Image (tube, rainbow, N blue to C red):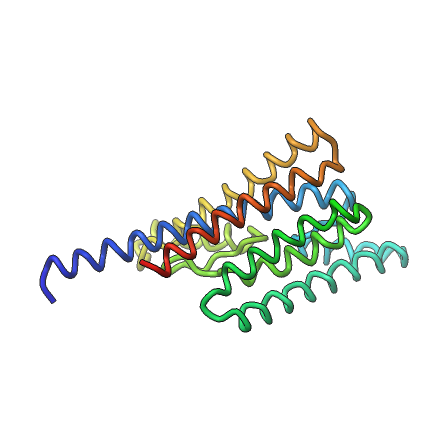
Length: 224
């Protein structure tokens, strides 16, 4: 292949990676915002952070607080059900799976506008499903609704690089994922402080905007 041809392919790959990173960051932002709204409803239970919920389940079981343990267990089960539903939709939608999953999540985030009492449970299910939207940016594997693995991968990549053992820079992509989820949480905290914890319409609007951008980027990427 000629040098211009190689340069063209490299530029296309770089553009595709940037597009996927922006998209993944937008979804992580939405996840961070949703977690704040969920916490406002469930108090000490997360809608996307199942490691924390597992610890809380252990505490509840150890203290024989069966009612609280049952609620946390139900939340974890609902998250798993959402992940399963997202995976099934991903398979059914084929090449359009990203658009399909994100649109479904946005629709779910609008449910509390009709049934406010379902808010926390819908958010849990939606965050489980969101993980099926995408899990790779270039050579890096990324998480959308959790950052423990994100920080581990960043730290490991940093350590390997400092020791001269690094084989690439894909670990740097973990940083904007963490910052995106943090930014979403900050934004939602500011919104709930201003408009109240039951301002579900704000999260629904955020979901629609994020989904619209995600779908547009997905369509543009497939055409390119």
